[in-house]
Image 1 (spheres, one colour):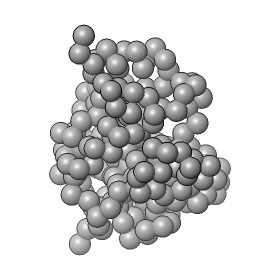
Image 2 (spheres, one colour; image 1 turned 135 degrees about the vertical axis):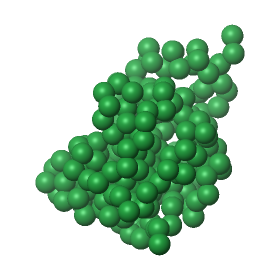
Image 3 (tube, helix red, strand yellow; image 1 turned 45 degrees about the horizontal axis):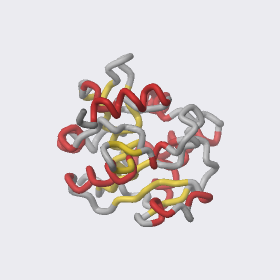
Image 4 (cartoon, helix red, strand yellow; image 1 turned 90 degrees about the vertical axis):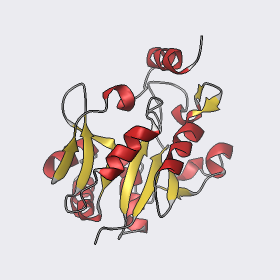
Amino acid sequence: MSAPLSALLLTGGASRRMQADKALLDYAGQPQLLRAWALLRHIELVQAFVSLRPDQRSEMLRGSLPALADSVDSVGPVAGILSAQQAYPGHAWLVIACDLPLLDARTLRSLVSARQPGKDATVFVSRHDGLPEPLCAIWEPSSAPLLRQRFEAHHFCPRKALLQLQIHALPSPGNALDNINTPGELLQARQQLEPN
């Protein structure tokens, strides 16, 4: 029997390259955090949370949604994933980064429908390098021991963890997983999403 599926929207990043909180960036009149949260309505889930750093709890928009604060050192996305696995150890986690403004409900539904609970994770591969995409993926409970082991060894890259796990890899969904890290990428994404 497969583990219950919960969702984790990662919003705890420092956004150093963007120099602005990526979760609060506006696309077509709506903050990206709310755009991404709305996509979760299209998936059958047990529960959904916004992942954040403890110092972000008082931020108004994040505070309006169910939240899971990092319970381990905030060292990037792996902190959010580990914290969720620790809080609900029997759950699988649909993990989504908040900097994917081109992500759509069809892409999420295809990921969930292709889920293979017998693997450690179900993932898309990157259209750029063919490597597994860790931040729009389903992490099964069986992935937790390796993630924890790597974290304790100060290895914080979730993609490299996927390379050590048994994964079910799906073809790239095109530009749906293009993340936005710089002001230039932000401008390009807005041009794609906003009517002229």
